[in-house]
Length: 309
Image (cartoon, rainbow, N blue to C red):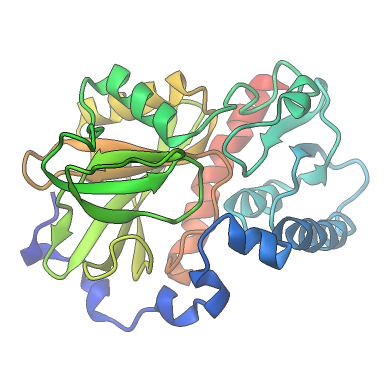
């Protein structure tokens, strides 16, 4: 476990500050920001243009990875893997070609799910809501951060049920009223010195291929990553903890994705608090680490594709 005495040396070096790069629009809570900026259409257009240009560099006979129903952003980690593997990007789900269910929303559209072949990567990972993550983690690990906010005395983290909303708040319980679409968890101490830390294992086909150790100032618990470092699973988790994380991914039917994991400073236990089946590029991952991170993941993705298609 990381202690104040062995903070990463990189924290003493100049690092990009996510808060400094955040626009005024980024402070508007979701889902209103997405609606106000027309984000879904803008991302579709941006991805389409980038993928068309990328595909033009490959022979027509290159193997294909189909994404459905959404299109990956050009800087997404999976696009780095696609480039390393020399895969063309397609958009037609087919049983005889590699296909991945790709939808950044919390609940996969039933209509879109019906079009996926039975062997699609993440084809059964259709619900990554916070309450489902909490329930499955409790079933797998036998512990939970979930509290009844009407009776719990202490600090509570209130989060949107939906994925990627970045709307976490800390309130003091008990609460007189609760809100629909919110989940309530006991706040745990993840501080090390002046920072809070979490880890983010990357899971591909039942393996933790690597994990990111993420740091941000304790004054800004929910936004503003200062540093991301790639680590091996053995550097961050015990053998039993790795088994829990893999069993969780299997239970939520995630073939490829990343988990947000917190370690309670008081008892040393880990907790999965979020699951993401369409991971974004980790903020503040130094360029010198990136090729290693993408290559490790590309090798695992290649093995997964070969085993399915």
